[in-house]
Image 1 (cartoon, rainbow, N blue to C red):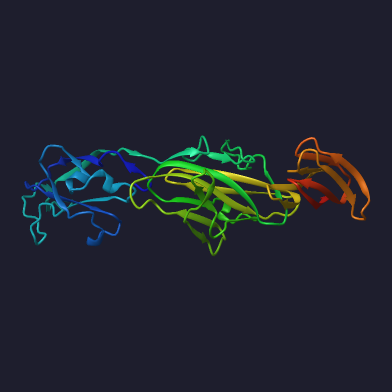
Image 2: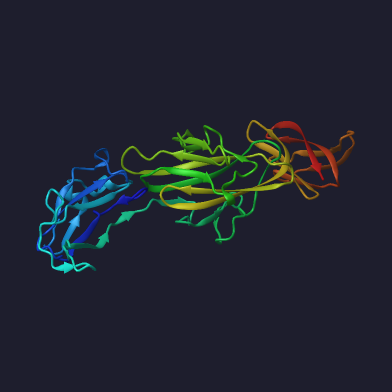
Length: 363
């Protein structure tokens, strides 16, 4: 029941399928374990006498029978074991009358046979709220920050995020869920189980939750594991200490991609309900200048050089590397575009009250 919240007991019917030939009955015990290692240390509670052959069909409520509640099995492994000595005595010698013979016509004693039917339990799976449409095994493309549910064969990531080339550029996405009782994991799920070139996660600070102002500034504890063979990253947020959790998280993956190349990472995200989340990033920005109120940056798409994040009414000038002015515009918004040929250019502009200079490369 890993990752699931039980809303009913685990129940089943136990019945005598055949009375056997010994003329005796067999008494059964039921033990419930936390592990497939059936040791005393892994017992939920001491074994109980549960059924004697010849009885009418008996409905067994597993947790109730051992003095527990269904909540005790929430997010747990549950191994139910029935055992009997059959109709043998303590020395394991059959003491009933034989009514069958084997192939040598020797008497054979056959113990009763029991059967199980109508095994039933109800539970709640954790629910994803964001990304919208994320259900078990669905595929979501990040689509430049506007996630969309996509086809089962589409792992492209949709429209790529444009980032600064050659640096660890952050790409963020949101996760919101409810009814989580198990761990929340984020791991690379690329074909062949290999690491996605160009992407990493920070050892701390990659997952944040909202502060009192509604901003994602509070670090969420997680463990980061890197597979020694494949290099695959896995982030794990521990299960709640008790009850269930509702998550509202911002996750940051770092993309370091050469100029004008696109890379994609496929993430397998699970809180008990698993889905795939694909992110594509295009290294189309040659440089970025941080200002007091935000970021101004230049991007290159084919022969178009765009300067964004500037103040409306700013004078933007384009120079050759030799210092020759070749184009100039007064911005009508926070963006200006220039159509330039192959080469290296210097752009000068004002962004958020600050003068700055940046470089653009058109290949």
